[in-house]
Length: 117
Image (tube, rainbow, N blue to C red; front, side, top):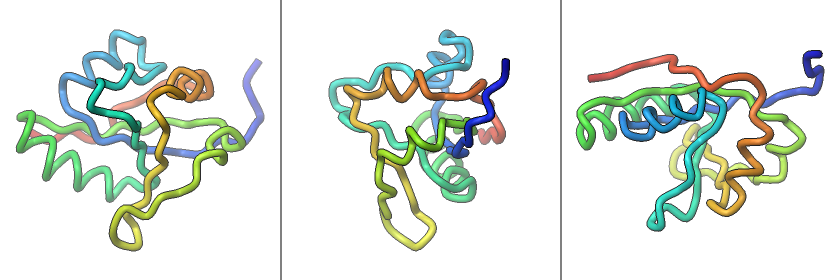
């Protein structure tokens, strides 16, 4: 049975190490945050995700990827949209300790939509 609940599309720019962990989780969840990562930041638009993956991840990790995934819209609504800079630089700030619950509300699979090297 497929869910008919509304979903919210989110993007996540990521480097190769995090992407390997997502692959190990069968493309259905994000790995736990590291101690120095108290917040998980999915972003609300593809262009912003592309800029981070292309301009930051490539420089720091040798490659950058943009992933896209769907989250139950009602659940995603518990996280206020944060404007992290310009008008289109919008993120959700998910506390690391809530990531398991966030993952449980991902609908379908996480998919890679762009790759930069």
